[in-house]
Length: 325
Ligand code: AHZ
Image (tube, rainbow, N blue to C red; front, side, top):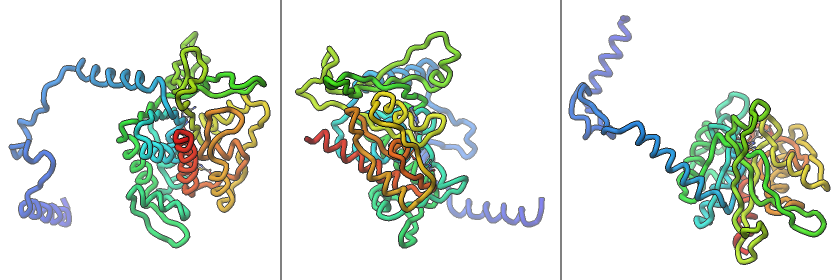
């Protein structure tokens, strides 16, 4: 052991002696060496039941939802925050294909930690109570994971919000909506992501559905109720990305997928925000985030995240107006 190490250990020891450690378990752990430490007893089946009962209760409650958000990236989570905060009475369900929610917002860009947001997106950070460095025209969150974990922790605490992760939306439920072949989305078709990814390998494994609220038993809209909506935020093209944008141009033959264009931060961010919101030709579907760029042909913006938060907020506002009217 080197002299320096010994010295450091001595200093640490001295500090510990001078200031006894206090932590959450201090009143529970009565011994110095933890040798008689125990957890309260539990049966393995109790753990299984505690998880599965709640999951199935959630599946039951959210089988009919007012808002289904596809994708829990920065745009989807920002939208979820605004909707849940303003309308605790709505059942809001988020379906995320990945095990870990957050999409591309765990890093600022490539493998770099800092997350850049151009003003006025900093107002959303203030709303979330997130610290940032003010650089004049833009602000910097010290780690993208701080933004993502903060918005995630707030959204997950809303009682009306449920995240089903490791679950993919693999189709839309649709209903005829007019005499000329018009279609309205009435729900989402879901499956465990691993099943969705391996359909070619299975003989048969049918999916599940989450239906939008506001329909009668016969599948027609109930005029006495506000019908539910889907907000798709599945990001730009990739293994799962742009899911609903691709699906919707199959359904709506008046539109074509324009495809995300090259990187242009200045134009891309405002364009994505302006094009976020309701999709005109298929009722009940809204878009936010980079999926908007795939649908509308906007540029990409790369590692600046203001547009993701603000497009989520814009789509959320449109959805809130729908439920308020
Ligand atoms: O796993 C996906 C991710 O978490 C999820 N998702 C995609 N398809 C899905 C499906 N069912 C369920 N069929 C699905 N979930 O959607 C989430 C999308 O998050 P994201 O961070 O990729 O999208 P965003 O639009 O919120 O943020 C994009 C940020 C940007 S901009 C940019 C560029 O300009 O290059 N690149 C990124 C990542």
